[in-house]
Image (cartoon, rainbow, N blue to C red; front, side, top):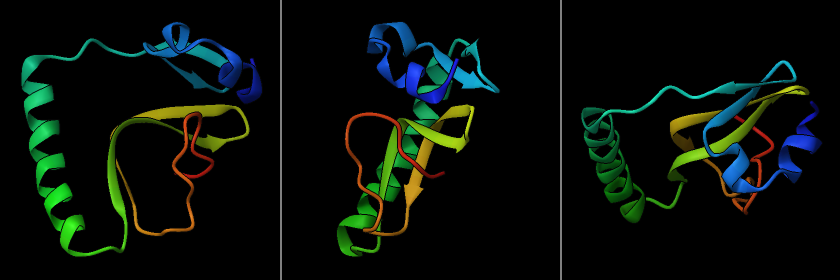
Length: 93
């Protein structure tokens, strides 16, 4: 599967998958502890980026790593206004 094919799937079809070297790979189940840690990290990053406009933090966003790989990080930090954060796959990681 290509990144373009992956991007065309409905969100409900991709929400539990990443694309790795052209193959759909299921994401592991997340635990309540996982979400608490992720949310605590986001809370602090949000506070930082409210004071400093050098970037932003986003949870669970798809980022293209290679021509055939899309990963979904728990937390992504973008330190530039050059990256357009729109629905879909972010073109950088």
